[in-house]
Image 1 (cartoon, rainbow, N blue to C red):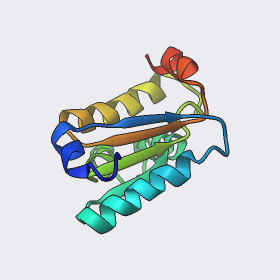
Image 2 (cartoon, rainbow, N blue to C red; image 1 turned 45 degrees about the horizontal axis):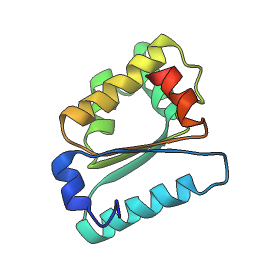
Image 3 (cartoon, rainbow, N blue to C red; image 1 turned 120 degrees about the horizontal axis):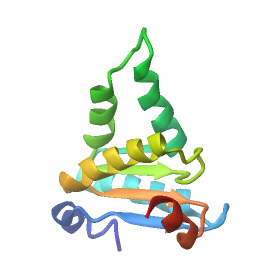
Image 4 (cartoon, one colour; image 1 turned 60 degrees about the horizontal axis):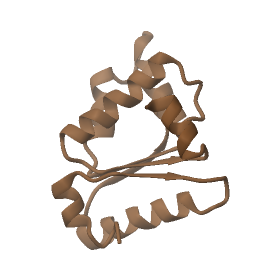
Length: 130
């Protein structure tokens, strides 16, 4: 239903959180959604892990750097759909929470759908990220 309602998702900026144990098909479903919106609606999509996103963002803090913070932010804000896997796997420092919040909040303000995937139960995810 999420993928078939893509035009409405874009208007609402509706995201989704999928929680479940490893091997339950979260990645498969998220990538199927991405493939559908890319092929049916010519939408842009990016799949990344929380750890990769945080490492890429932090890599801009040392010199020499290949990208600026603004470029990393833009890279994750510009796709019409962003899928972030392994939410909760990273160390959970305040800095990492701020980085993820910055990207997710910018997307929310721009009405761009974001799908978050986590192996944590929803209760544990809520404790970590609120």
